[in-house]
Length: 358
Image (cartoon, rainbow, N blue to C red; front, top):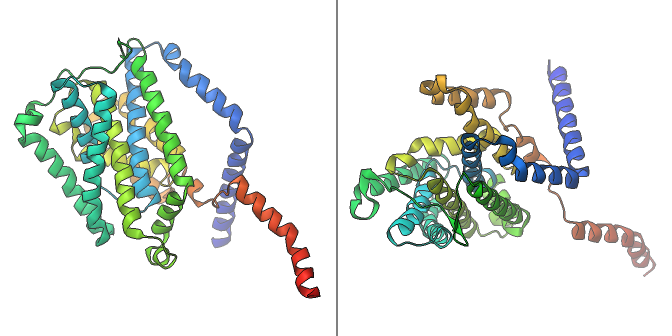
């Protein structure tokens, strides 16, 4: 049985690696095809409802990218990320409705606010991890919801914020009807993805992954765990606030119940299903879990039961997620580093001969 299971695992890994090699070899062509498809998608669908669902998928993909930085790469599990989404959504919406501020400056202020709250929430991570951290973040999400519910003079309480204006560029309102909101989503998702890739491939990203693997070893290697954990919370909070701002302008109305525990569960489910520690997995997970309710409305009452069943099955048969196998691949070195290694290998025999002669 052991030999058969080992062979099966090896075949799966070989197939996945071959698929990855094919994608890497044809990366430019595939990206070009994908870009053209996404740009033409509104005209292909030609349906406002389907386009609204697509924008919602993009918004949740951004939220998953934010949580993935914290959970997938740093190893800190959060059950209250709906709080950061609410902060971004409420800040941007209130500034737009009450102060007449534009979408972009209001969104930036929402991200800054969420980042500052992320610093405060990141401080407890210095002392607790695992289940205790999850409980703290769960409490944080509920606290934000209660503040939005009871701070009526500012948030309008349970009545929520209505008539949230659509973003405008050069005096043109971006809506689903004119495809502007879709292209705005596409632009924000593109920027967020590039930012996440840049972070992951940087020194900061390597520190995040080292902390996830072993905090003690990371400390021995000179990594300041305190600073990097707080930084992970800040980055994650800012990205989720950006997604929350986009989501609020999509639906046009928010209230405290818009950002309940179900939202945190949905974001975490997307990360787990897509594959923690991957970028592409966030889009796959978001597309599956957001589109699923739309094609199974007759099962709406049992939606979260089905989500639970899906996650249990995934954890049993594929705990790494749909694309989680990518997180186990060796770290990809940059071309400059590879060139330096090759140069060192070429110079090594000559240096050894000189040392021996000397």
